[in-house]
Length: 240
Image 1 (cartoon, rainbow, N blue to C red):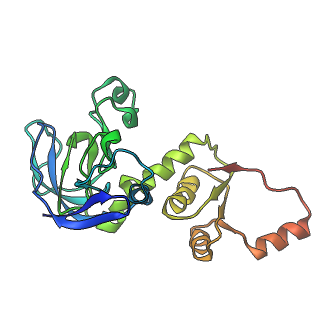
Image 2 (image 1 turned 135 degrees about the vertical axis):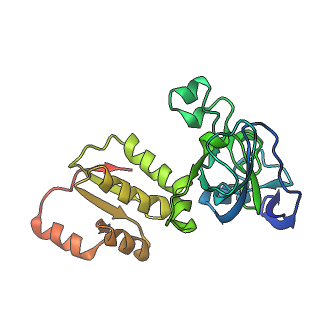
């Protein structure tokens, strides 16, 4: 199969490698139909994440179709269309039972090196997904790959940040940085009851997109004029 292979800092290549195989009873093999390049992948490229070994497959945002499952996998079968979390979790250890899957004793992050479980990633034609019952989710009919792709990392990161902020319905929120995660944070804040969401970014196209979602773009000449004429205090809110 073809895959994106890490060789060294600043050196990644598309190469032909062996197809993955079932290694553990809870594994699934997924045929990747859509994969994304996360901003975190650039950390690997620039050498700021230790433990990347030459020959490792990178990537952790993916949608695909189940090709094979291990004997312990109960929730999925061949042909199921799935999206996966960027990290894997066993679902059974003490931290998993408490709902802290990101702290799983046996978990890791796909395609992120020795320090994160030494798991091959998903920028490939096929990928081995450990603990498939807990790592994968079935994609509903009618949802495109591109739409489903956001749920494995980008949306969940943003939603988790809003939840962790302690936002209460009716409060104001400022989202600083309106890239993909920031845009999802804008939507998550509204979904969780924010009264107003201020979208802060120096890139005009990003704040314009946030405005289409109901946010108040910052900087915004219209908003600044309104605030100046009102001569009132700065809006208090929470910053994500």
